[in-house]
Image 1: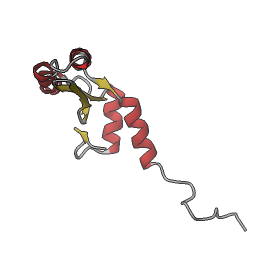
Image 2 (image 1 turned 60 degrees about the vertical axis):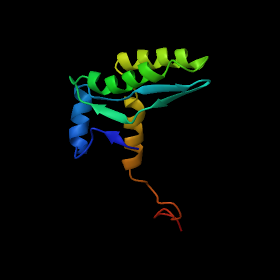
Image 3 (image 1 turned 30 degrees about the horizontal axis):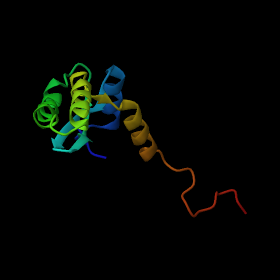
Image 4 (image 1 turned 30 degrees about the vertical axis):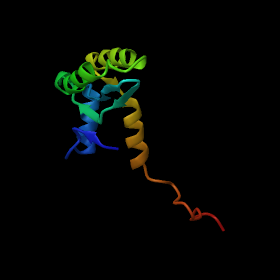
Length: 120
């Protein structure tokens, strides 16, 4: 999973930022070609507490605003949804990302294929 904004950040620093109110978000973008409309999610961004997401959301919102409307019937529907989420600060996925990061770094109690030390 690629997360923009975590480059060279230690686990302790990440915990500190999350406790201060940092969050993980992504943005939607929508594009249409006549009868086909596609809504996709951006990469996940780590946003430290107090930092604005406006600059990150602007690129995806502008793309959606320009090319999202033109598909029928889902173009206008997905465009409005995408713009609403983006202009509201993005889709917050902090809980899911923290859970995934925690489970991927937690050591296994017994490696697969081995037996516990008290087994005879």
